[in-house]
Image (cartoon, rainbow, N blue to C red; front, side, top):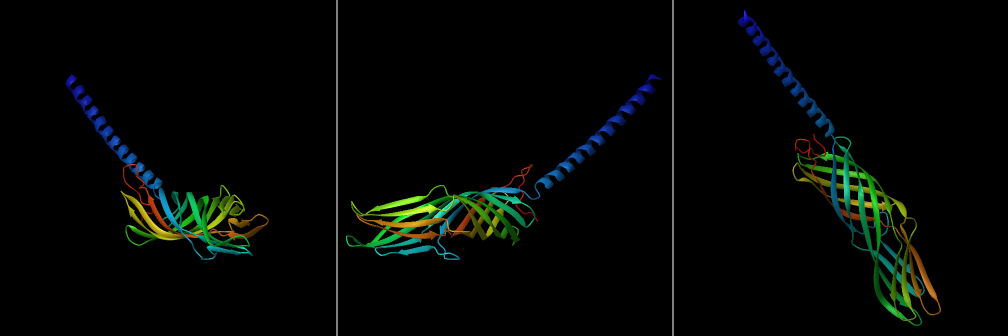
Length: 272
């Protein structure tokens, strides 16, 4: 009798153990399935952080890159030179073909001044000085992608930037103890709006990140600085005034860090 009860109890324990193992197995499989779904959902349109460097080139597209001022005794010619901009950039995934791009950039525009002075007391046929304009900008662009192959993409972007100019500029050139040439650059406002346009190509590696090369143009909606070229002598002063547009072209070099998933995988900016 005791053997019969012991046998029934043993069979019952075995049944409960098998049932529990099956339940735990199904529960674990469900949790893994749900976790994978959540992971895919979270990384479907991921965001990426990168760094960029862009050399600046003068452009006469839409606005002039030089300014010529001529008076009775003073002539001053302003030319935009090679400059640069660098900073951080963020791509925010919105869909398979559209990203939102923003970031923060440092911008340095460089200019040269060729001037000559022909007065009763002074004859300077050719002199040169230079100055720079510093600003910071926050772009907001819409990025559109075209997939060329598994790893190569072409993109184009369009948007606007908010630019901040922290200071005015001033430069002095001493001619003699009683004569001097001065340059003044006065900002119209501390904050400006600028139009952005860009086109380029991107190579994506799941482990190494993304490498980008392209070209951009930036055009402020209004002149950024009022320029004054001033010749001061003992008994008189001549002042010439003009505006600097601030437009420029850039060659764009960017690197985006890889976006690692929960299990060490890397999801590209646009997975197709």
